[in-house]
Amino acid sequence: MAAKAEFENLNDADAAKVAALFQRLANFGTIANREKFKKLGKKGVGLFEFKSFQDRFIGDFRPGKRFLIASYTKKKKDKLDPAVVKRAVDILFANDQWEKENKG
Image (cartoon, rainbow, N blue to C red; front, side):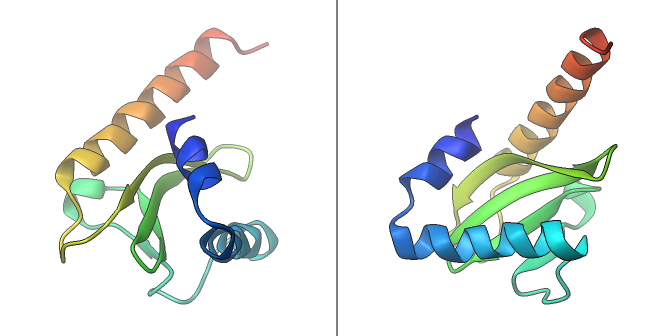
């Protein structure tokens, strides 16, 4: 929910750019442009990053052809803050646990 709130707080132009990336992923299942969508390295195993200028949305593919956005940051340095990656991992884990407990 925090990532959704951050998306809703973006200005209209930035929100439109990010929404176009989300729509492209929904339509094609991937985004070929690594400047806009890339798999994160060692510490972000399995995570992907949507990038639009300084706005970064971190998430991962889930069962059922879903992609869950887990965290957001405004990246101002060359490297992504490890705390943002950890927060995404924690949120995805909590979501998986919730889905297991509430399935069916």
